[in-house]
Amino acid sequence: MALLQVNDLRVGFRQDGQLTEAVKGVSFHVDRGETVALVGESGSGKSVSALSTVSLLGDSAEVSGSVTYDGQEMIDADERLLRKVRGNDISFIFQEPMTSLNPLHTIYKQLAESLALHQGIAGDAARSRILELMDKVGIRDAESRLGAYPHQLSGGQRQRVMIAMALANQPDVLIADEPTTALDVTIQAQILDLLADLKEKEGMGLLFITHDLGIVRRIADRVCVMQHGEIVETGPTKDIFDNPKHPYTQKLLSAEPTGQPAPVPESAELVAETEHLKVWFPITAGLLRKTVGHVKAVNDATIQVHAGETVGIVGESGSGKTTLALAIMRLISSEGSIVYMGQDIRSWSVRELRRLRKDMQIVFQDPFGSLSPRMTAMQIIAEGLGVHGIDDGRSAREVVAEVMAEVGLDPLTMDRYPHEFSGGQRQRIAIARAMVLRPKLVVLDEPTSALDMTVQVQIVELLRGLQQKYGLAFLFISHDLKVVRAMSHKVMVMKQGDVVEQGDADDLFERPQTDYTRLLLQATH
Image: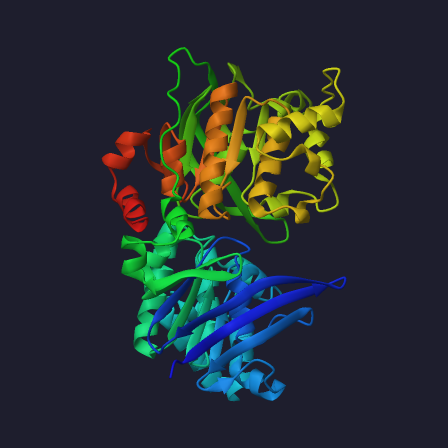
């Protein structure tokens, strides 16, 4: 008998009398000691299927079919049985640890709560079990981290805490829902190795939910491919990758950013450059807030970007990538020269900079966080036109309709709000908001990392097309080296504030000069 068995699972959500089907007759199983991957794009029903296993979907969900854990039926099960199984026999690791961890409680308190609730362990016994768990998931110097709050840990450390919490009660089944999506490639590789190692040692069944097929190839024994609430193909990982049968599986496997950006004309204008740029943030202490040290975010960065050129900036979290870009845009203070269109702007006042702002735009990683939920797409995209007093004689709606069509959005949807769009569509709105001002320099800060692979490909092609059409200079920040290679003419590699290597993209990818660059490249394979 399988450890977790799902048969003909159907899930619908009722709203205003209407039932929307999310999962349509899904069947799969997870055996002890094996990893099964549920793969598909956003909205395919992966997470809904996983949450159904222990009735975590809320009152609006209507669930039918069968889910058995160790022979016990979970659908419509007694609440006492569900409470015993949840977090104890079946544990979850979610995508974004910052939303799963309580920001007001220390790491120790959150881990101790789980042990007290499920095992009745407290005091010294709890402390020693927590230290053992933190050591097991690779958190160095665990003793000093017990009193830390989630915001004081890096993304990789927070995800390790989530794994420790999930393992605290020695579950039989671990359900990992996109646990590495927002992590650096090196941290991602560490987390995947850690999960594989723990599964082996603890003999757990692992249900791994992801849209990243590179991860699936690395970690899964079997694969279930989901589309529109149905499993369209299933089989051993090697068979699925070597001989995919379903068109959707074939489409997913071929969805990888490829190609190169158009060559930069020799006569291309130099848009922005820095020399020996340095950004140090002071650390203050005491009653008089005396400076006792510095966080050395960027140490010595020299960079040039021409019209029609993309400079990719890569490195792990905390390496200084975004800080460097914000300094070039004069959004944070820095030392060293910043030259924009032939003028040194480092000493310019806020008023002088205001007229430059429309020429320097930024697109952020998470469009749901950077778009106002209270404004329609029309209001979001048109806002900059009013701020900068741009009027070419047309109405704002005409201008917005034109730029929406340009970025692949239906102008008829301009009166919708952000939550009414998919993740890829929201990112297109963010790009349209920047493009409507016809900028010369655009900072793209991880613009594809939260998106499905097929949508990533579309956004990369969109950005390359816009760059060629308008001669845009891009600073492209990412930890995804496949996307960087498809987008960039030149690449700068950063580590802990230092530029460790930079040069032509092809040279850097084919012949990396430093051990750190080689490590980053190895972590993507």
